Image 1 (cartoon, rainbow, N blue to C red):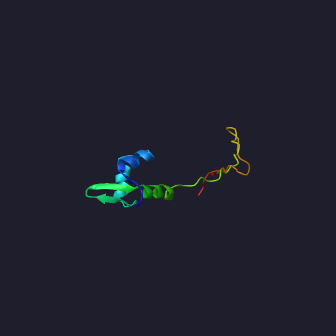
Image 2 (cartoon, helix red, strand yellow):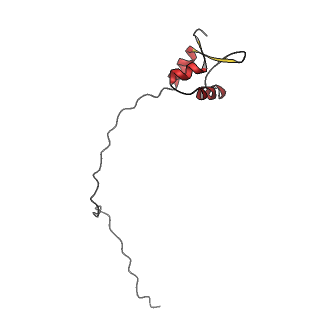
Image 3 (cartoon, rainbow, N blue to C red):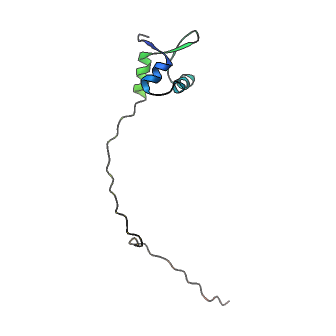
Amino acid sequence: MSGRLLTLGECAERTSTTLRWWRRAVFERRIAVVKIGALVRIDEHDFEDFIEVNRSPAQEHRTQSIKPRLASGARQSGRQSIRRTHGSGSG
């Protein structure tokens, strides 16, 4: 431990999140903490590591071909309507 000790409030302020979120992260043991009596602190280096580990890299932008929409009432090619005729039913 060589960094400054941060309060949960300072962690919340730095990440624009709520104090509740950080309390839950501590409860679920998702981040290492330093307990001094009843006080809970997070080492600044652990905080920075936590942020780095949870960073999602940007993905390459993929363009998708956009198919033009058909005008209302037009049918797609290859699709045929199936009509069933009911016989007079002698039987």
